[in-house]
Image (cartoon, rainbow, N blue to C red):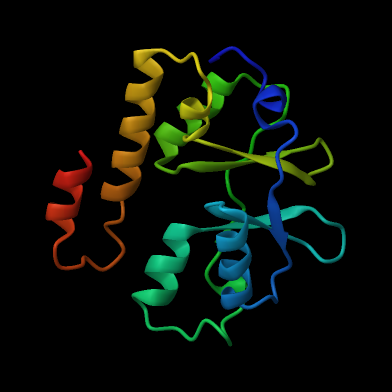
Length: 166
């Protein structure tokens, strides 16, 4: 699976997109309905990727910060210009980039910059055959993403939650 092209990993899978002016509430509602952890934010002019909004963005940048989800546009809380990858790259390369960057979702874009899908650390578990080393990599990506939020406010019980997860 690590050498498998990303396009093979994401083929036949729906993904969500939003334009920057959509409310955080609308984006979160669509994410919940589609059972996905990220929405790709695209330019309303040319459809190119301009950002990503993840569950973590919703939790930390809206909920913890006390923003109004009905009036806050997704552009205000998205991660702009996220690291993205081409569809012909190996899945293992995407996992490596996610590990290094401390994130769990990566947009897959066409050469023209338009999104064609999302690859995530959870894609490893969707395959029937994956090695223990890949499982360990997903574990470390998730742990690093949870721990690398030093710029975000800490919440009570964070250590207890992490100890239950890991």
